[in-house]
Image 1: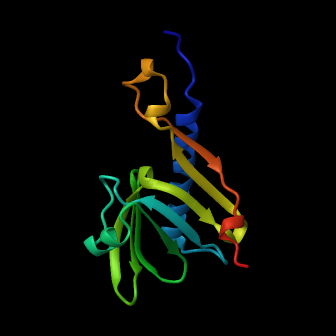
Image 2: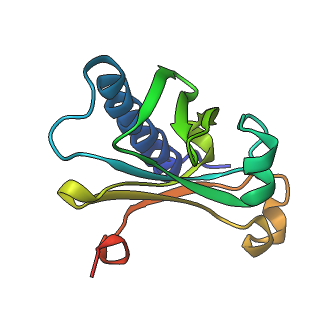
Length: 146
């Protein structure tokens, strides 16, 4: 079998690394200026940790906003821990970078979307191959306030 460069996985890792660097800076120095983040993640990812009532309310994916009130932001190579406020109830959570589906900073019109290829859509010869992540820069029109 011929060796090939797996650009999809390389891009995936680079984009996750960008998010890690941004969040490390925010953990150390706070959010600069008007920056804020909308982060959508897979609540069923095995390493996501959040309150049962939040998982029940968001059984597939959830979008959190890091803007005005957040606490205890800690970043490690696999993901980040943060406490967010839900109706005057602080809730700690852990979000692995691999669980992130979108990362958007609308203040500068920047966004990333992570998608995986459905293994059912692959050739039958590749049945043992796991889903391959793909990444793209997203258009922010859907996040604009009208």
